Image 1 (cartoon, rainbow, N blue to C red):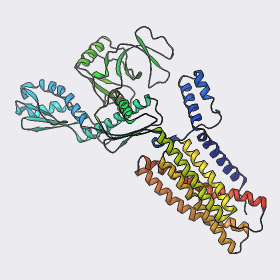
Image 2 (image 1 turned 135 degrees about the vertical axis):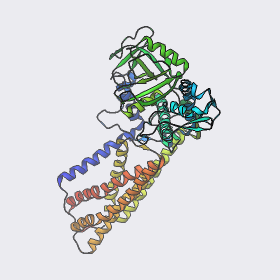
Image 3 (image 1 turned 90 degrees about the horizontal axis):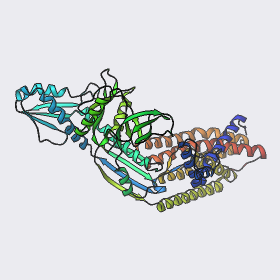
Image 4 (image 1 turned 90 degrees about the vertical axis):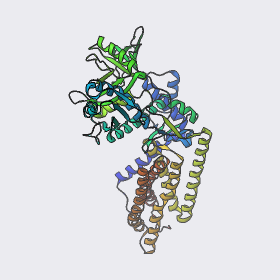
Length: 555
């Protein structure tokens, strides 16, 4: 039998060793998880930890891999919610906040339009009645000046408002492009708020993702119940605007009486000392949108309600040239300098922004509260006992599957079946190591994918061994039969595995949730089974053949 080059043998051996070491932490899951949490806490504290954290960090050797497969909701227990965001609430809020601006704009041309009043209209529609309909064109032109360009790639060249005449009434709605942009911003904002709330609670590996046009899937392992998760999501973020006293890089600096030391979200290591009493709070912020400044550079415009506008106007008039801090949940997200007196409650934040940066900052500014009502369509609590039962059932299924496959292969192919089983064990280790390395979340369907892969993994060995039998019947020597079996079966193995991999990839891209988990483990299993069946099995047989040098073989 032709021996593989030494470099190839070494490479295959190193991959197998990596699989063993990479999967090892999962045998000591709780111990390694505690170690990882302690290391992360010490790192976040600047390398200084408590005695308890130091002891926890010592539970696992630092020179060994410590990556774990994250356990999904069905294995760890926790809460599952499916929420629908009422996007029409945002349209209504936009029209409500637009009415004072429209009224002020029409006040300047009262001699043409007469008296104006807001007429009853559906949510998301602003209907304004003019007593002088002859001035409708002038009114539309005046209100059109309030419209802004839509800040999206697909909405280039379009305005945010549609303004039409209906008898004595002027009807104002958001344009179709702005509605799409508003929907995207609302969903992005909702995701950001939910993620902030969940992360703040110290939960582990949550799944928070958009589904369809207006739904959000929230799965949080380790939390007590769905009602607890709903209460957590409903918490309002704290957004405030503070005068800046000074900045520092000293995390332990003395802020002084009635001051706060707050970290910068944008620049790690930078801290702001701000006055404890805010100038204005996020409760008084009406809106924040991405826009452009007078030099056509991306910026963020914002607007306060009447009370906030008055307080903010008085402060900016008295503090031109001074910075003020925008604080979200105890972090300074921006600290612009006041350029001029900002009257009317509207202002603009400029800086070295891209369009994406300005959009993100606008989202953060609006992230003080959920932008729209959320209806929970589905809620489910999975207890930790059920999760433990699922893990136990998964282990049992995996062991039964492995034993059944091993028994069949040994009964059918004898010693060569044993070699295939050894390669199958390496395959299982590689799957676990890869899932741990990429931080994949293991779910029950994922376990099903692993069990299915174990059955599929020996298909390649069956093709190889049956081909070796044919070559032996044709009169070839044992060594040449083994070479021919591996070489001539490869094309059939490759074709069969590629078709399975294509199906798994399609499932990953068009599926969601547990379907994608199944697709991930199946895809990894197909790739590793190709490696172990073709290369690991051959290396084992090569080593055995070189050691025993048999005159005849029975496959």
